[in-house]
Image 1 (cartoon, rainbow, N blue to C red):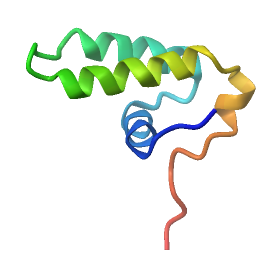
Image 2 (image 1 turned 90 degrees about the vertical axis):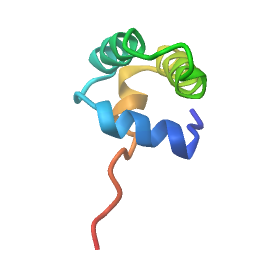
Image 3 (image 1 turned 180 degrees about the vertical axis):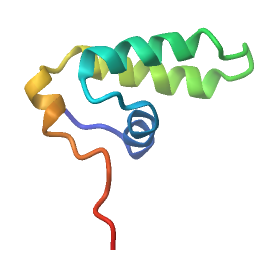
Length: 69
């Protein structure tokens, strides 16, 4: 699954350690967005769609945190 840079950042911010819980957390976060936050809502929707279309094993292979220098 190819995630955008912004989607990786969003997942890193809300990462709970597993795909299903991350989907729940992002879905809940959307309820707090205002009507004017359309860009973040669209980003979250796209991320949720991609998360729903992948397996837990694929999610576990994602590198959500870059290596520190």
